[in-house]
Image (cartoon, rainbow, N blue to C red; front, side, top):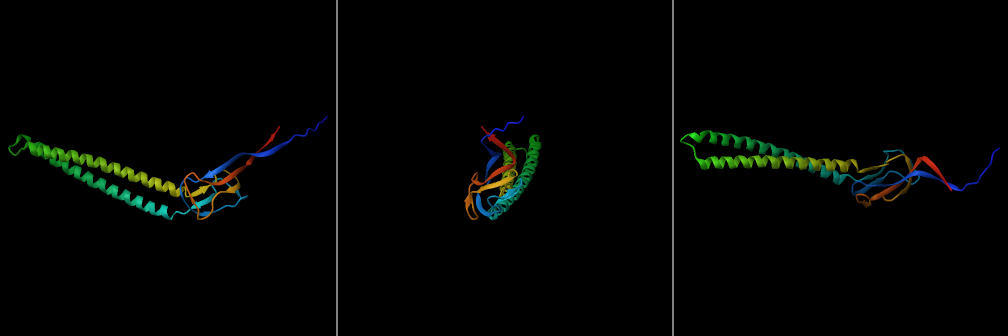
Length: 180
């Protein structure tokens, strides 16, 4: 025995997502159109990278400057340590001067602090390089999952800010039926 029951419902996707930009910039190109099927990782939008490339070059130069500064500070510390140790070794001789020893000790302490400062600058420059590289990687806005493009919220030449919605994707790989 079979019985047929009429049920009203709808087929819905389990996931729909507004895809957002991780970096701000001018849209260089829109790579998809409404209705396109895309695979996870497919490029949806490309942000112009000219300014990001300039920022990368600047960050790399700052990193090189910081590294050179750290090397100079390290050399000055080595020299200050030698001078201080020589002055301390003369403590029991007639050529000893308490004032000179204090001056050498202060120069050694200053050189030690300069090394710490140079290392901090090097770390800050490294973080800047990583930030710019992150921005460059995210200048291509990619599909987070397989799906269909429902909407495009930007166009070539438009400036978008970080977090701005650029497209809406519908996951069509898993469909559900909702019925009362």
